[in-house]
Each structure stands twice: as structure tokens, then as C-alpha cells.
Length: 343
Image (cartoon, rainbow, N blue to C red; front, side, top):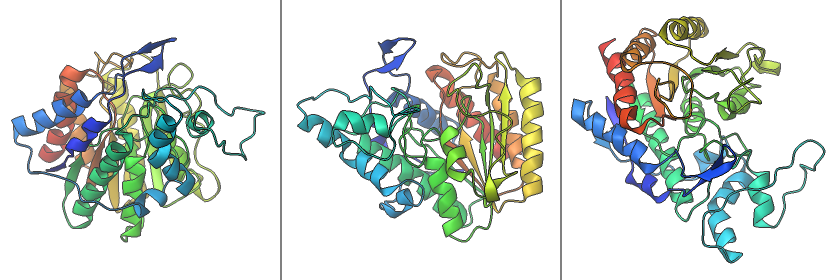
């Protein structure tokens, strides 16, 4: 299987995030990608290539122009205010506050275009997130060109980013950008299966009113788990998208038997939908030792996830998302890919 990877991800290395009421070192760190890449090489998964540059257009097919402009210039605007440390949002336009005005001040814009304080903007964030999107797009181009599958080793991840906000370590939604590119290149239907522990709220919101992209997510129950405000089972799409959104909120402590049952149901829905291509938001923070998650999957379970995805028989793009048990992230992510190849 072809792997696409860019060293540019290292330019984004936030010093801290707000979690559990304190500023802590970011769980989302460059070493995550290093461990996955190391495992890809160790098992001889296949060729590793750098991404092509697809420019700005694919980004604005999914995200608004003003949001992309904000991301491009946020660090420059932050440092122009006299600060040279990481930028984090501190106020958000909730409920009765106005959403029709984008503040001129950078602190206001950081809040306007985010939904949490887990998205530090650093000197290299723009370069890293655009490289990450290009990694996904290069994988998309390979699959469109006839590859059975490709692995986009994206970092930073993307599935919490919506059309106009960042959050959860995510700035540009790599999986959504790739899905839209598949459609633009002639696919009629795309399914996105999100197996990250946390609900892919950004991906859901981007495609919620559409029928050409089916979204399915297995994740921790948002009643008790981040991102809290999306991911419930009654969210099934709206308008033309009604019936094309499927959430599988699962309780803390979920282990393989119950997870497998939900995965089988999701795969049956994908088969019934009949997509031309499948995008997998590949998070492995479902692992039993993940420091910020509450599922109980084991190393060998990820091989079986890959096998079950392979049985769908669709051209497949894997897009790396979460996973914070750094010592095991490479084994678990690559086990999915090896299971797919064997399946």
C-alpha cells in the first residue's frame, strides 16, 4: 500500500492545550507521525512518497474562504499584536452573542473560528496543515488513478474541523477535503467511515445536508465524551442529506465484541449505499491504553478492523486522525492497513 507523508508536519508543535482545567503539554505531537512512519517502514507496507501541492482551491471546496484566510494569516496577526508565543482562543460566540460580525482583533477571530482551546496556532501551523491536506489529496489522486488503497499519514489531524471552525487538534478537514476531491474527479457517491474514538463532528457538519457523501462514525457517547455537542444517534442528516448520516455512540469501556457489532452494522450500511469510493478517518485512540480515551480495543483488534473494511471491496483512502498512546500508535494504525491488505 502506498503511504503519503510530509516532514512539514513538524513545523506545528504546540506547547500547551487547555484540558482538565489546566494548561498541559499537547497530546497531539510530532512523535505520533514518527511512530506511524517507523512502523510503515518496519513492516515494509509499500512505497512512501511526498505529497504534491494542490493549491488553495481544494481547501475552499470544503472550508469558507474567510476561514482559510484566517488560518493563513493568524500567526502573522498574532505576532503583530506583540506576542511571540502560541496563540489560543479565549472567548467564543455562544447562544445570544452575535455570529454575523467577524472581529477585527485577532483574539476575537481566534474565538470566532474555533470551538475549543485545543488548537494552538504556532509559527508553522499554516505550513503544516496545508501539507497535511496535500497528503490527503495526493492519496486521493492515487486512488482515483486506480490504486486499490492508499494511506495518507496526515498530521495534524482533521475530522473535528468544520467548514468554518477549528477544534480538537484539527484545522483543515483532510478527510472531507479528500472526499470532495473524489466527487470533483467524477465519483458519484463517497462514504466516510470514522473509527476515531471521538466523534467526527466537523465531517458530519460539512456533509449533513448532502446525499452524495454518506458519513458514519463509531465513537464515545457524547453525553459523557468530547466533543459533547454532536454525535448522537438521532442525528441522521437533514434535507437532501436525511438518512445519510449514521452515528454509533458507544459507552465507556467498550471492547471488541460490542465495537465489532457496531462496525458490522456500519459496513452493512456502506454496502447498501454503494459508494464509488471509501474514505476512512483512521483514529486509533480506541486503544485500551490511550491516555484520553475510554475504549478497550487491543492491538490485534485493529487487524480485524482492516479485514472488515476490505470486505466492502471499494477503493479506499485511509486518512490518519487521532491516537495518543504514542508507543502503540504505529502498531495499531499499521495493523488496520495490514488487515486490509490481507483481507
